[in-house]
Image 1 (tube, rainbow, N blue to C red):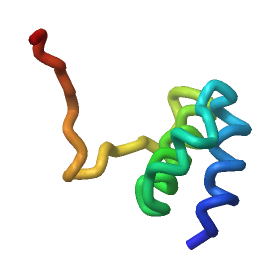
Image 2 (cartoon, rainbow, N blue to C red):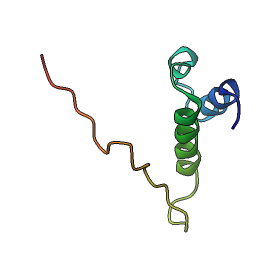
Image 3 (cartoon, rainbow, N blue to C red):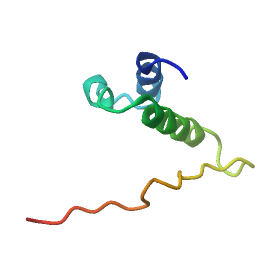
Image 4 (tube, rainbow, N blue to C red):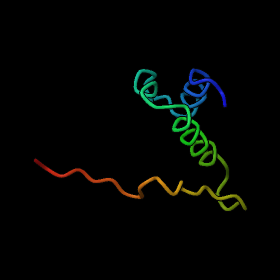
Length: 66
């Protein structure tokens, strides 16, 4: 698996608004999943490949007021 610094650099090529210090909080596995998601999103739509959300990732996250 690529080193965390390489993953962060690759992520920032696709998402310039992601701050390095924020990304550094995540482990390498999480960064790799996010990079895979970004790479898939950069492909033309309608192709044969599909990104699938990992089974342990929630489909929706909500905050409650209070």
